[in-house]
Structure formats: C-alpha cells, structure tokens
Length: 109
Image (cartoon, rainbow, N blue to C red; front, top):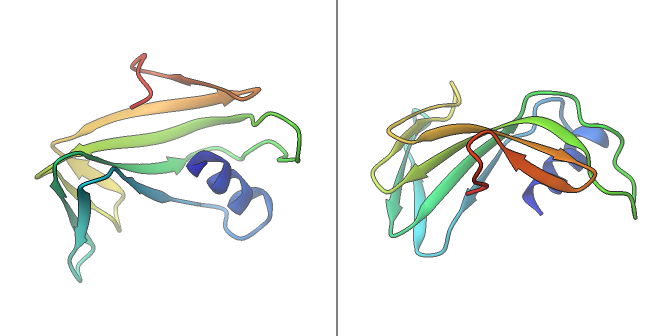
C-alpha cells in the first residue's frame, strides 16, 4: 500500500519527490527539531523514496515503479530526514514491475 500511495502522490502531481516512513508494530520514529530521527522499540522502520518517475497509475492495472530507495532501520538506528540518509541500517533498492516487487538484496523487508 505504501508504494502505491507514493506512486499516486507522484503521478497525480502532488509532489515530484514523494517520501514515506513505514513503521512496524511496537516501534516508533522519534524526530528532533533538527530532523534527526531515531528508531525505538522492538521492530523496524523503513524510509522509502522513489528515485525515478513512476509509470502511469490506473485502477485495475498492476503497478510499475522502478528505482525505489529503501532504508531499513532497526531500534537505535538514526536517520537524517533533511539529507534522507541513515546511519546503522541497511540501504537497498526495490523495483515493481507489473505488480511484482523485487529487491536488490533478495528480501523485501
């Protein structure tokens, strides 16, 4: 759902550079006024940013969206929101082609 939401934001003209933070259950992202974020809790947060223009999004049509940067952050990991860069986590890339998601690491999460 998050990837489709990002695609719609871009495709519908709301922003050229959509970003999302997806947070697992029992986890939170604490953000300081400087934009420095720290993940706390028992699970993981994901900082997601498409880096390419999304193909047309249409109802009933599988999503195609390439070059999605993901940063997986476990507890105690920090992330600089203004720079969109993390420290202590795992960076990888997702591609969605005809509704099928693939990952540069072989794992989606």
